[in-house]
Length: 320
Image (cartoon, rainbow, N blue to C red):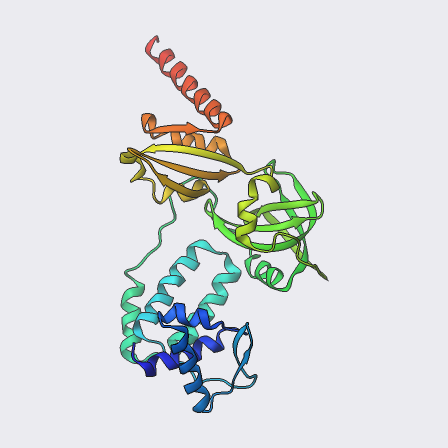
C-alpha cells in the first residue's frame, strides 16, 4: 500500500470509532509508531481536525466527515459474502438492517462492480448444516445489541431447557454464536448470577427503561473463561479424537460448543462446553473407536448406555 492510500485508510479508521489508539493503526498497517505519528501529523497539516488525548489515542473533531467512500471490488464482494452468512446465521431484525446497508453499498458502485456482484450472487451459497438443531428464529438480535451497548436492563419471557416459560429481568453483557444459535450472556436478577440465554428461546423481550452498572465480569472473554462456574447448565467435556477422525469434524464440532484443541501424538484433545451432553454423546457415537472421553464421567455414562441399548437391540434382532 502506498502512502497516499494509507493516509486515506487511516482517516477512515479514525472516523470508524470515537478514539483510535496509535498501536491499533500500527498493527493494522504493519508500520512503526513513529510512522503513525508522522502520518497523523501529515493529515493535520492537510487540514484534517485531529485531536489527541495523552495515553488514550486520536479522534476526529465532531462535525468533520469524509465525502462518500467508494468501495473496491474486493470490499464489495466481501460484504456480499457476509450477507450470505447474515442470511443464514441471524434473525429477521438483523437481516433487514444488513440488506439496507448492502443496498447503500451497491448504490455507489460502478457498473462493472455491480455486474461482478450480480454474477457472484448466484454462485455463492451458505448451506444450513444437516443437524437437528433448530434454525435461528425470533426478531430480537437487534434489540439485544442495543441493550448490550446501552447497558439497558431488559425483561425476557424465556423458555428454559425444561421448556418452562419463565419471566426474568437481565443485565445483558454480550452476544456470541455457538451450537448453531446466538446466545445472550447476561446477569439474571431472578437467579442472581450470570446465565446463558439462547436467543431462539426468547418468546418476548421488553425494555424496562433502566440501565445498570457493569459487574465484575465486563468482557465476553472473561465470562467465557468462567462460564463453567457461572452457569450450571453448561458442562465441560474433554474428548480425544484419533487424528484420522479429527480431520473430518472441523465444521461439526462448532455445533457442540467447541472451545479449543491440543495436538498430541496420534490424537487431538478437544475441549467443549455444552448444555446437552446427550446430544453430544449421540454425535460422538458415530466416530466409534476413534473417540476417547477424558474427564467427564457423565458423558462416559451416557455413551455407555447408548452402546448397551444398541447391543440389546441388535442381539434381539439376531435371535428372532
